[in-house]
Image (cartoon, rainbow, N blue to C red; front, side, top):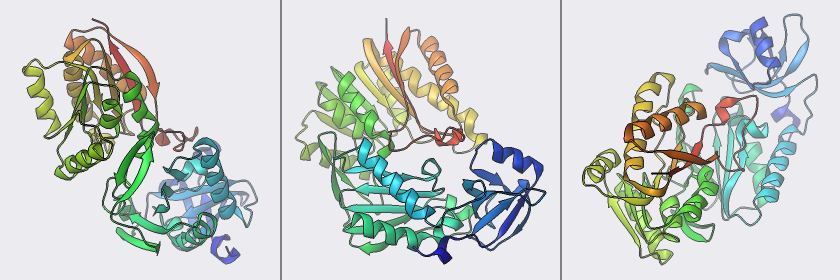
Length: 393
């Protein structure tokens, strides 16, 4: 780790509104709140107020609407900031998830390493550098990870669309060692295969790791898991339910669930390739009934303009799930749409229950796993909502 890689090499001057935003502790400063920037793309800059006072330090982007991603508030940025924060992030996961073979080691802004994601899958790591600043630091991050964790291989999954907003190429590639097509990891007693090269996110939905266990805890009788992907919920539910139907529209996902079920000797899982909206409608009309239902759809609202149709989608699937639940049955329902907050989703559930003509009670509210912490000053980092709902009549 060399000083020339991480030391400030430019200046950004904030408007008064930018200074006010900085005081809230939010780590993003937008283009409209930067009065002047004397810096190249991806460098660490000193952030100043109108009167020339040093307010902190940030990663600079010349392309994104998020012009600055704050690293530090105050007058000093230690030379060892990158190594220190990587070490703190890894040590925290070692403390809260000992022995967990698949987890998030670095969660971007919530670890004071904005736009950097590092996930562990057994002996392999997957890295995402999602801004110009972190892309410039990628080699330094890689060197630290290899030295500290000694992985068998490191893969970059820099294919999210957000990189285009930074003027960066979307790509997937090997950074170190070897990473096979499929990696097997353990999740709460289950063996799961993860496709690190082409799978959703970085291979698995690691943010749902702790919530998957709810399906085993609450599961009983006949179970249904909609939008099943790799079967994280379905396979856990199968350990306590008599039978489970897993639905997904992806043929690849269906094959993966079947493989994972077989590897774990779970013969009570039936996997169906289907459009989930259509399948739920057909099951509801056919009068099918379940004791346990899981809904874990993809993000319906990927922008603020998509919120209204997303809410209609959430209401439809939850209404049908509640209607198909037997009395005393449990619905585990999730949303990963950052633009739909917890209160709004709860209102949607209340409306769905009313329209379904059922009484229901919230048993638990949960969020993403502990290795995906929420930054208090940035509500955007609380994106995953998970409700456990019990039908009462």
